[in-house]
Image (cartoon, rainbow, N blue to C red; front, side, top):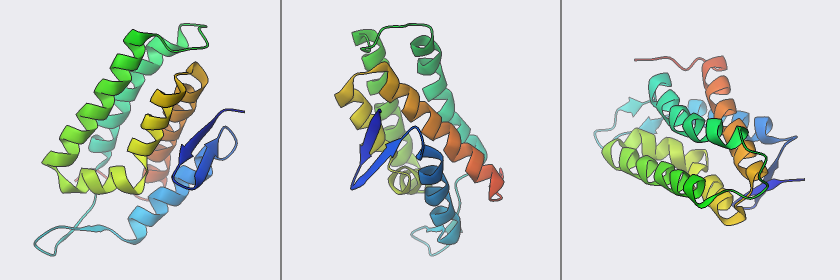
Length: 141
């Protein structure tokens, strides 16, 4: 069974949804507080932007039966990581979301494993984050 190692946690095809729900519930329970002491929440559109990056690679991965990811796909995954770092630097609320959901740890593990199945698991995890964000009342602001 494919697993993503995220800190001390192991996310797999049977618990990725639970892991996503736990992360989102934690975010909604304790919102990000900016440097001016104001609460901020990440918007659905920001999370969807992240999913869009992942989906572009997902569409390429799903159309191949290769067990190992190609160098071109790994380069695209590396680009997602860079783009997320940029967005995190621009907006502290995005950085908070990325840290609380262990996004960087998960994508790094995909790059280390280099397998189709690890990326597909990662994509399901990201999609689950959006689903639970909306379920628990996440809105565009």
